[in-house]
Image (cartoon, rainbow over all chains, first blue to last red):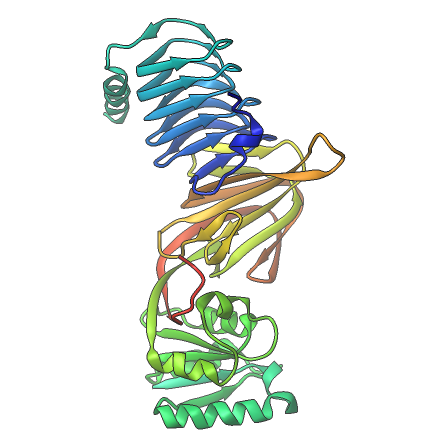
Amino acid sequence: MTFGISSMAKHNGEETVIAHGVRVEGEFNSEGNVVIEGDVQGVIRIAGDLKVGEASKIAADVTAANAIVAGEIRGNLSVAGKLELLATSKIIGDVAAETISVLAGAQVNGRITMDGTAGLKSKKKEELEVE
Amino acid sequence: MYLYVYDESVQGQRFERELALIETRLTDLGISGKIARLALFRDAEELIRDEVRRGTKTVVAVGNDQTLRKVMDAVADPAIVIAIIPLGPGNNIADILGIPQGVAACDVLSARLVEELDLGSVNGMRFLHMVTATGVAPVCTCEGSFSITPVCKSTIEIRNLVQSDDLGAADPTDGKLEFVMRTPRRSWLIKTVDALTKLPFTHLQLKSADTMSLLVDGEQLQGTEFDIKILPKQIRIVTGKDRKYV
């Protein structure tokens, strides 16, 4: 199974898309579903589902409801529900998720936690930040 | 009480017959009113504001997108209903609102399907449809928390009222504007394709070292810094059953 630009370029129905050739810096928050094919640096907080394209390079701590990753994430990844790591994905950081699916070729350099507290942790973190 | 604002462009012989038909139909429907004719040296804003002060509750632009823009600029009170009877070319907004050309628009006006829509604002200049800028590479700061920068010159669109296209339709009632950036990139063939970035927002700032030219509902605005925000439910406008937005 491949999950590159060709499959991710179909944007219809997606609320937010960060395309290849675009750089995002700062605290990126979204209430809906997000597709990232470009580069992001900072913090990513997504209430909906996240797709990270093959050419995408993310240097950020990421939280999302569910995620499919084909690109590179340098930072901690916290997913409340299901995380799919595709063959081209590379995670340099800790991963927390309720369920994880990993394809052959995917790289994870960090600790994997599956104790069902990923969503709670990200919520608590957000609450602390609000306080 | 209705005020019909005739644009300069519809006052020639070309639309004489159509205007006569419109006036007859409006009388038949019982919605005739005062007619104000725009002219080169007549201040449209003052003319319309005077009539609103005298008790006009509905202002109807008779002409095209530009006529509607003049009416919108003059009518600051969101309680006043705005409508359009499209005549001639340049009627993109009327088309999206589902208002047919010429005399057929009178029946839609009479049905009075009034919608409360959002407006956008660029440096204080209000817009209903969209803003475009081509060949630009500004730093776009969204909601004051993150920035978006294209790696090469791109086309930017800020959409409020847009009919459904490859990106779907922009909803002018959701309290958000839509930012779209089309960044050209070479595919594996020589052909260039656009990579599309899109996201909803309420506040966006564009900053560029070079002067940028923005088309705000067809009107040009130049500068290096632009402050763009949503003005929720700022306009009450007559729409048709065949409207093309969400």
